[in-house]
Length: 460
Ligand code: C2E
Ligand code: MG
Ligand code: MG
Image (cartoon, rainbow, N blue to C red):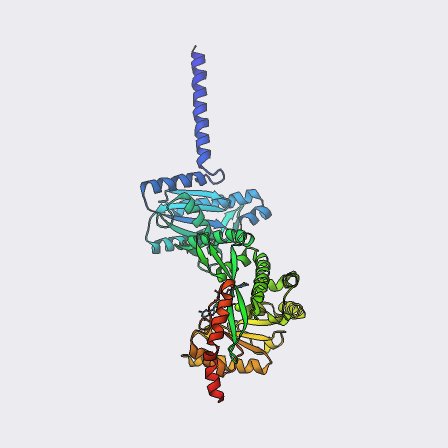
């Protein structure tokens, strides 16, 4: 009987021990004996539940994977253990120190003033990066350090995780040794993620449309061409600027799909307005990345197979900075586009630090002066000087000149006087939907006399 009781008691003890082991393993990191991700998340949740404040310090060992690969896992483990010991001795008042991933450590310490946190974190980083003694040799490893204030910077564990990752990402391209979470950064990142995901379906499901902005001859006041400008009204977020989503399309590998889609839409719209008696050329913007896209010429040829006018009445606008990124590659593409007979224009001229002599070597026919030089043309003598001399020099090189951003009569008249070839701007017309183009063309025709009056007076 006693034997049975002893056996049962032993079993119970072993069971408790086993249970304790399991519980320990569930909340601890095997290698460093620090807390693990679970433990950290539980502590943070408890903090949020009680409304307590605390500071979180995050550390990532940037080269741990390389160390494991080249020096072996055992060596890597020794590094982790060394770092863990340092964290424990440097942060005696920490509520929890945890290893939460391969080379990632997080510590929760009592809330402090941001300046104190920064000083502490910098010191900690110095200690972490100073050489460790491993197998009797000194070894040091580089680390990234970030800090967050809870609950100011995050109010749920999900939010914390996301914002922490973003801060680590940002820390990688920062010269500062310690990076603090910047409020608002996450929201803009979320917006980017959403827009990037939704852009794909907008392209496929016809969520994008084109607007067209007239360009007038400054000499005759006639509507000569329209510039195609892409528009996206997002179902939840509303108007999204093309600059924003074109950048995201470039970042996410969707730019060629987008350009191909735009080319088709423009060709289709152009057929429709030609049928309504509008006799205008069209200008299309290309992204810098389109210049290195081998299928660009095929898409252009296909989209404009039934173009009703001379090919030179299709203008492709490429920004100056895109051309200057890799002038040789740009040259090859421009030559292929030129071979299609289309007109090539340098958009946003004046913002990309190129010289006219560099541009002269490229097979372009037109310069489009950036609106930043034109918006205040009537009041800024320096802009006047730049615009006038650019027009003169470009003409000297046999290039046509377009000015964008004409917002008032004074700017329009100056450009007429300086013999700029084409002008585009809100004063003449805003970009309009394709079905408004006929009405816009009629309005412009009725303003034509007024718009050219100044010239008639000059020449009389
Ligand atoms: P951009 O090619 O330089 O286009 C001219 C921009 O100036 C347009 O802005 C137009 O609405 C604006 N603008 C025209 N006149 C005035 C004016 O008098 N005052 C002011 N303040 N602004 C004026 P938008 O449509 O927002 O386009 C911005 C940029 O996005 C474009 O600059 C172009 O770089 C890019 N973009 C637009 N559509 C496309 C497209 O279909 N494909 C590509 N790759 N880029 C596009
Ligand atoms: Mg443009
Ligand atoms: Mg521009």
